[in-house]
Image 1: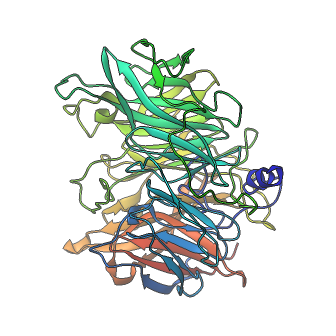
Image 2: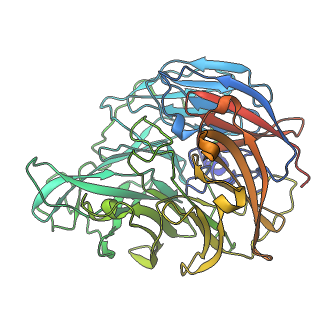
Image 3: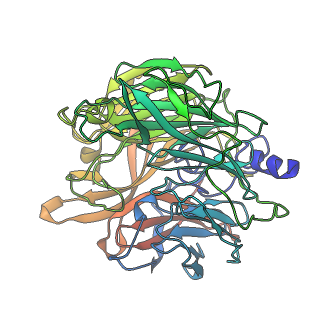
Length: 534
């Protein structure tokens, strides 16, 4: 097990020189950075192949995208997972054993662990499937799996269950986010994909009382939870913050987790401790196999750039997508250097549906271990979050970033790409994307980012309605912080004029050819072959 944990800790470690080329889990790292070691940095790009993973009427979870390493791509389908060759798009294997699963986590060999909330499955890179683990108490509507430093992964349900497992399939701990607010018992329901720093998870929640006739509106809450491989207190709420008044409170654990004494209105109840697990596994995955799953290293001393991009047209609720503006907006989180960044609307902050949905905030919260403190809170358009981590492929010269910026693209201010200081929120750079592209555009996918030489490079999907025709593109651009200039590198028609959604991933094959891969809203996927001069 020591060897296993050592492998877990070194994959994203720049000091070890071993970095997965690609995007091995949701957000490409446990902190949700959406940072790639390779993106398009030139105009010399061509469509390499296209594939249809399932038809548009049954496609599920396409808004998540896929995961990848150097030689493997795995995407969720409505029935399980499918693996493709990044060079040719050839289907390597397909396993229809789950129902609308979330994104899995992948190791350097292409092995994955995935779940749909009812079962856990481990599939080797060659398609060999280990015995499926049936969860004794299934959970519905889970977010994508995420990784902890201790060699474990976390499953978080939208209904309030938080469950940790060792990567050999042994259950570690569980927690249900029940509590009492203003005299009302209820559950704190996670609102967005949780993010992890080390062994601490940050979960953005909304409180839903058990009683059906409660008219009171409840503010959202950010909860910090620690998970440890200890004899006691394996999972515990450390602190939480009410986002409406931005007050941070230290969680006071119960003396007896099984008795559930009354708590103060601002406390959370621990429903399960290490002796009362929510899940029972049968059969167990044998621990003899060394799963090389990885987590991000601590980079406190490394300067890092941050980027935000608005969820302009790829709004979805459950499995529904659309390039229109009629569907609900989703909040998002990112954690880097012990700072949690949130983007959410006024309605999501206060719980009051009468609040103007066009008023949203970007909040930065510094984790001081036992409490959180707000660094800045600015009125910003609702955004997807992304950041540059100081990680590059083995053999590449490591680059230190001099410009520490957070970026957003505004829905309500004309598609303005804006860079702000990551500590203060002060605007440092601004450019009009529609003017840069020469047409009105919407962003349809997650923003993917890296730092190459002296410039930030971005990849994302866009929607154009120039001349009344709806057209979808794959776009790449760069920003030079020294010159304070942006440049469009390429704008490529999406094959079949299909909307690009989810996280865009990269893969570098054995012949050193680089590919960018994007999912489309109708269940398809395509690859772009890159001829970078970097």
